[in-house]
Image 1 (cartoon, rainbow, N blue to C red):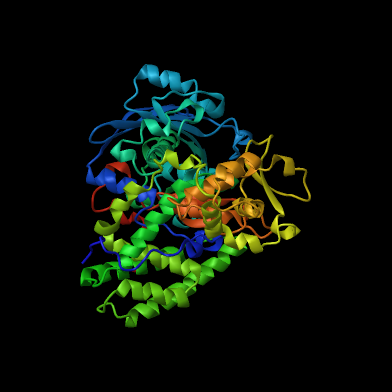
Image 2: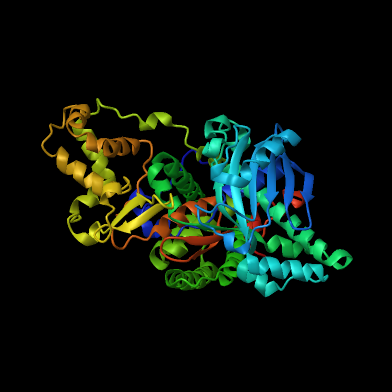
Length: 562
């Protein structure tokens, strides 16, 4: 029944999926990286320990948290700091934080910790080694932190409404991996089973950071209250996640990594296709879907945002869930291909936000059918970036047309179609999206407008014989090398290109941010402008020592109206 060898419902067309408005409506799913990690750790019965917690009454010190898997261990080495309020900043250019971390490959000794103590608190100004896999830092939510220390020190639990409104005690301002600051390159860990899926080291670092944050706030409450202090109630602690503010730096990532991004999207599209191709659903599968639909409603009802765009999308999503709840009352789940029928209905009846929410939900009863796809989501195809100079010009032209044929009809001389330019700020060292005709930035533009560049390449190719090698064209027009490379990559990465204009006056960078963050497993996206978004990670998840096969996966769905 669940065989995927002859999928009868094809994957959705990239021209449908890869529009920015749809990418900006993606939701977490079974293939999200946080859930992939917690499932694996529970299934493999990882063990967790805290070999060191040496923090003084000012909240300054060091701690080590170790995760022991079947073959190897990883340790979060944490440094707690007493940060003056005027130095607290979430900017990339900050030089001090409330806490700094590294994920160590193995279990560190005192010499390792001493070496790291002279570097990790400095972040960019320090250097780590290939024994370290990621480097990160975090700042407190000052309001909730003080409230929680005060309440616990007096023997009381924190105010539930305040906890819900903030959602986290600390927020990461960066989690760096893949060779940053001297840390291990991705290639050094890519063949380890537990690191095979993308961003597993970073997700593990955040998972262990959440444990440290809980311990630290309880420690500070004990310092203040002595014997009167109490620990966080387990159910209260589980509501807390790790916050994160993500800005424009993440948007270029999905343009610059077309094979990797394709693999994420294609795995999800293949999962959706497999479930739509299930001919008969069991009563248990249907009941599981309906239970999680109800919990999704609980989650969406508690999703708050002050941004006008997100308020509108939330209103749409609530309306979509109303319609979906009505539809499932009469939907023929006993008939053939019930999930395809539901998805087909949604394509006509729901907004993109609702369609993508449903697409994620139908995967939930089918872990055996889709979870293995997480092993296909990394990018191990370095050959894809080598240009095939022997490819005939006509074939290259067809490949460009396939992804960017629509771009030929755009008037690229019109200001509204090229109003923006991506560049890197010298002062802040952060990606920026500027106004091309109002700021002197054109000379510093980054190649993050593939649609415009594709249209220019197609124009340049017009006089060339379709049978000649593209190498001759590139010899005369080297400025189009990156477009030809991207076009050839689409042969193995059909979902690698965004089918929209990334430099128009109307572009919403938060759509790109949400697409990436949904694959991390983030929920309750809260845009603060069109350029940065606040999220919470691991809210509702068990803590490491509570992790079991019963609670390792569906923690993302809140208890409530089930």
